[in-house]
Length: 313
Image (cartoon, rainbow, N blue to C red; front, side, top):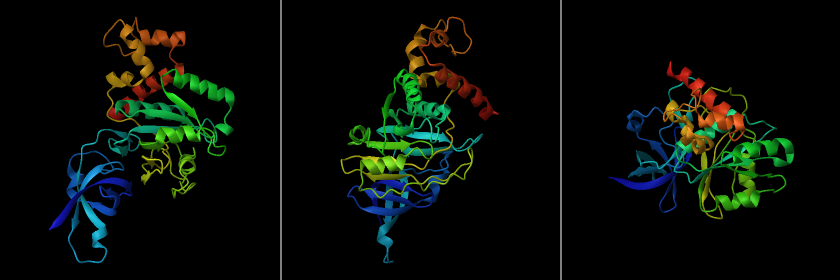
């Protein structure tokens, strides 16, 4: 007979998954084949953060007690998802069952594209994941650019924190934010995710500078996300850098719902089904003209609408 138990996925490598049982034991598991055949158009059916049902086969083989099979995925309360590649209809789920996402952004060394920021924020809004923006490597950033960035995103109701792992600036604030929470840390390669996590909890064995820059934007690259328990309570999910962030499963008519600043003023539109692009009496476009909604954010909204047409062909 096989022994069945519940566990949480803490590392996913594509073929093997490390899970932690309710008793705190770690085990390597594979996926039972039929999990891949449920019509989920995802490149990774099991992700870090998933609560899963596993079976440990009773066997006398050496090491058998340390391996199992994932037979069921419990319903997810939320997740962060992106399009697997350009023009692909498959999705790639980054992590699930998250209390908060931290999006790490740098304005230079390297520069995080604004469209990446906005697509990530839209996805978090759509899947009900609270998100905080961390302006990383703040000691290397231009003060005017930082002020402009804060004006745009604080104006859209997002919390923006300034951090520098090198100087220790903002680290304690982030440590408090992580305490007792399961937090996804994400961003482009080179923004300092692993360095910040290791600064917050030096006991963690997280290698830095290990992400290859050789892959091209648009090509799906396998990601080995890992969940680490924090000494102060809670856990952090470290993800390899993401080059692009394509949206998936978001209807054009609902897209504006995921821009908080547009949601604030949209009730003032003349038409209930306003697309906020060309209609007369549109409160959103008027707010953009008055500077109450940042043009950069509105431009992202228009670009996402235009881009979405490509994926429908």
